[in-house]
Image (cartoon, rainbow, N blue to C red):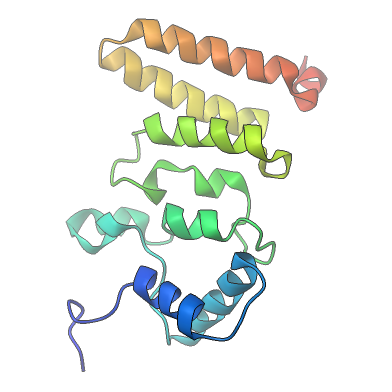
Amino acid sequence: GRTSSMQIDWRRRFALKLWCGEKVDTLSSLSKMYQSDCARGVAPPPKPRYASGPTGELSKNTPCILYSLLSLGNRQRADGNMSSIVTPLSHTSSPHDFSYAFHLASALSSMNGATELTCNEMAHLADGYVMQLMHSGFWEWAVYVCLCAGARSKSSPGMHQLH
């Protein structure tokens, strides 16, 4: 057999399927096909880049953020909600690094209402990022994140039901 260092990673396999495989109409349909290939064991699972190292055990069941973004339209995925996309483990080995996750969630929420986070999920991201900023000494930015998260929750129709 081949050693793991000689195997093609999921990005290259996905790209080969896109460029050289069957014609597909959307990336989400290609994602469904790739997911099927993974289930049959003919394609490598879409793990984050850091997952190949010693810290990769943390992300064992977390798909790479790139794959998740490419699969946004694939409603057949069990983890097709946005909270699984913006988890820190989808892009970093630190489960406590919320910086990128917070900004990505904000950007995705503003572009597509179908991928909205629940108020609790957004609060979890904001709280994690606020704590990270405060620990680093950036309390001014922590206040800004709180204000942004608060303004977003007031404009969310689901939040009014909680009050």
